[in-house]
Image (cartoon, rainbow, N blue to C red; front, side, top):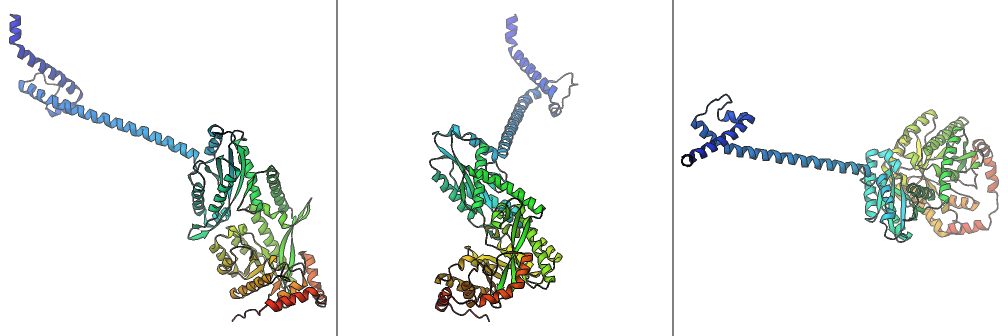
Length: 560
């Protein structure tokens, strides 16, 4: 009976089992999801379900379970996406941290840390132990003056442009790194010969010298490079190599900049001597060891003394009297260059005021370095000194020279105009010796040109030099500048320059540079000395001079 009953009741058991399973599933759902209870209007307080209610549950539960499974899949997928994004952001953050730790934030170039890492890898990554590598230390000439004048944003832009140029000038295997300020280090691994490295350095010099547009102004700078060589498998420590290149860089600066120098052991001693010299110069400023000598300037037409050039000297406590060439190169682009320049200006103006009180009506010329001229405080300091030591208009002449630091021609022009408003004139020193003399003459409101001594050394025998001087004379008339000829050492030169129409001269024929008291004594006896010189007989050199004048000289232009 039992099997028969069971078989006859199979559909009921099957339906009951399905119902029980449905109710079990619904129970799980009910226990976890109140939303479903609200959906089917059930509550846990129901004690009995009717058949229609069970049927509704049976029909709804699979759909709800499917919907729930889909939502859970979405949630898991979303969680997975979030986890992946989080891990990706962590990885990117790690990469950013590594990049920031190994690269310069301004230029994107490798920094010192990455440079040292690549230096450490040289011995391991070089296929041939005998391969040469080169380390070059690069410093930008004239950058500080431009950065001070145009501002840090312009300076940063200049550095970024130079960094991009340097990167394109080297090989892919090379490393250009910025280690601070305007200083770069170039690592050249796997160099077959030193000449290969020097060709790359030539390209770097060329790239640095190209004009750059900054703040609607075209500027030019240059670079100085010191380089040292070593075998990759036997190299010195990283610090030693960089220090060697830095020593060679100092030699390049002393040579005149815009060049490279190869490290030699003597570079170390030269570097140390410079630092000692800087300390001694500062000590000399603090202890009044510097003095000014004055070299007279006279009128070739009236033979009267019209001015004097102030020339610095150093009474060194152990070395004796030092000339400018003995110490000025050491302070280029250094704060001492500004300090010493300000001392010269104040001392010269103090002396000018004293001479004016003594009825000595002359002008004083003072040399101004490009770095000092481009310093942000230059005009304010000059104006303050002019108020402290009043002087007649144009009795202070500031001499400037062509130099890479005078790249911001508009700023130089503005300084000259502002100085003219307070009675200061400007002169272009060593005119004709630089490649851009005519450009400066055309763009700057100069009052005076000083012709370098090299143009008159051979005028007694060279027709070409005479023609050059004639051209300079014509240019000076066109631009309204007076001309002072430097380095006059012979009577014949003096006579010839006078006949060619030049107005002013200075040189050892007239007088060597003298201390202020000696200068005053010299002026007192100048008239008598000049009169005795005028009575000298014309010698053979004077006859040669006269023939040159007759052959090449034409009367000067007459300005309307």
